[in-house]
Image (cartoon, rainbow, N blue to C red; front, side):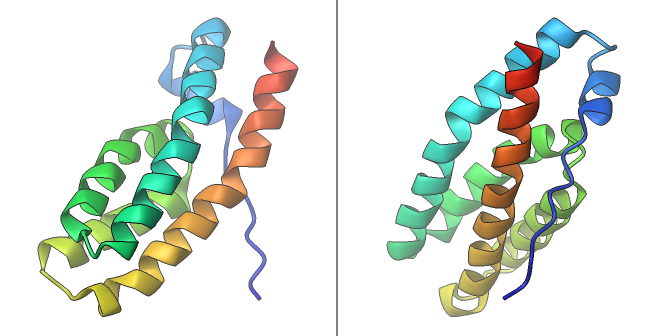
Length: 119
C-alpha cells in the first residue's frame, strides 16, 4: 500500500487570500464541510457509472485544490477531467477515481488540524 503524504499548505492558501487569516479559516471550514459530501457523491456516481457527474464535481473542486496548494489533487483532477472528456470507459477511469478519493481523504486531517489551530 502506498503512503499518501498530504501537501496542504496554509502558506499557499494565505498567499491566495492576501494573507487574510480570518477568510482563510472560513474557506477551510467550508471546504471541510463540503468535501465529505462530495466524496460520497463521487462514490455514488461511480457505482452508477455516471462519469459526467463525477467530472462536474471534480472540476468544481479544482479551484480549492489550487488555493490549498494540493498539487497532486490538481494533477489528478486534470488527468481525470481529460479522461472523462475523452469518453474513456468507467473501467478505465475507475482506478484513477479511487486514487483521487484516497488522496483527497488523506489531505483532510491536515486541513482539519490546521483549521482547529486557527479558530
